[in-house]
Image 1 (spheres, rainbow, N blue to C red):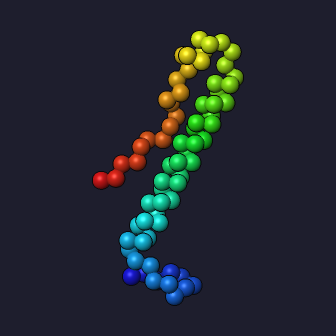
Image 2: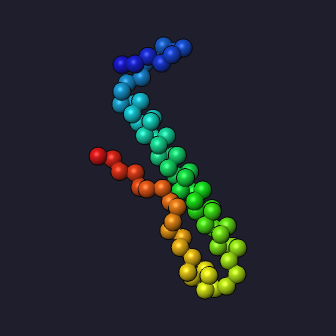
Image 3: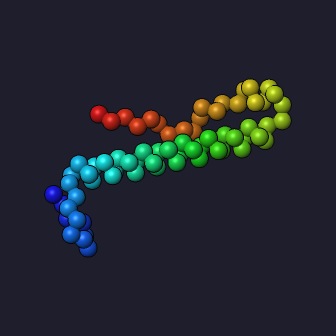
Length: 68
């Protein structure tokens, strides 16, 4: 068990791992969302249907999280 600073609350290793993993996923989701918004802005600025069709919306996304 670990003791949180300035607190008498006991936090287990499993709980710490869960909190850390949750923050990693939230950060990944935020990065994914931001990239999607960038693509939407870019597509809105395109002028012709051909530009929209040829636009590569798959770039810039964070890599998937892999837990081993």
